[in-house]
Picture 1 (spheres, rainbow, N blue to C red):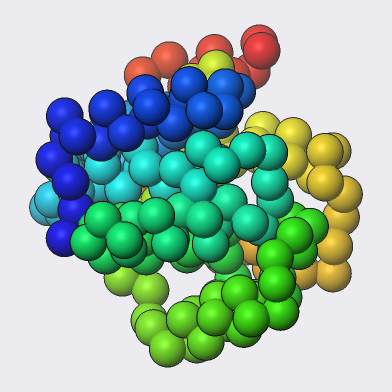
Picture 2 (picture 1 turned 120 degrees about the vertical axis):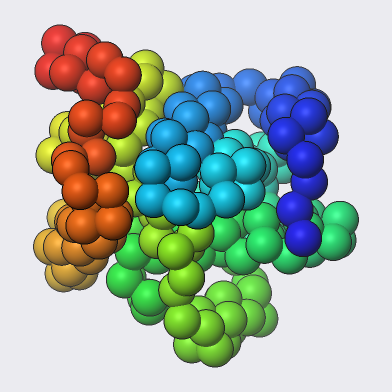
Length: 198
C-alpha cells in the first residue's frame, strides 16, 4: 500500500513546515528521477514517484542521521503505507548491511536491531533498488551524476571501510536499470549536465 500522488505531495508540504531544509527539494528531485526511470522500464511510475517523494519523510521530526530512517518507517507503517515504509528504511543501505551506513547511530539499540532484522529478512526489489539509485542521482539543485553526489557526500561524512562497496552497489543498480531501458539513465534526466557547474 502507498498513498496517491496528491496525498504524498501534501505530506511533504506538511513535513516541510515541521523541518525546513534542502531535504525537501532533494526528495522532489528523487521522486522525479524515479518516475522517469520507472516509466521507461515497465514499473509502476506512480508508486516510484510516491516512494521517492516520501523516502526521507522521517526528516519531518527534525535534524537526524539514522533516526530519520526509522522515523520514516514508523510513520508510514502507521498510515498503512507499507511499501513506502519499506523504502524509508532501505534507501540508506545500498549494501544491505546495517553496519554499512555513514550516518550517526542516533537511535536505540532496539531500533538498530529492528533495522538489522528487517534488512536480513528481505531481498531488495526493483523499488528498493530504484530509490537507492535515485537518492544518489538527485540533490537539492536537481539531477546529478553519481560521481558528483558520491564526492559531495564523502566530503561531508568522510570515508569508511565500506564506502567503495556502497559506490559499487549503486553503480550495479544503475547498470541494472540501464539494461532494462537500453540506454544510459542520464539520457532520461533533464539538464543533468548542469550539475557540473553547481
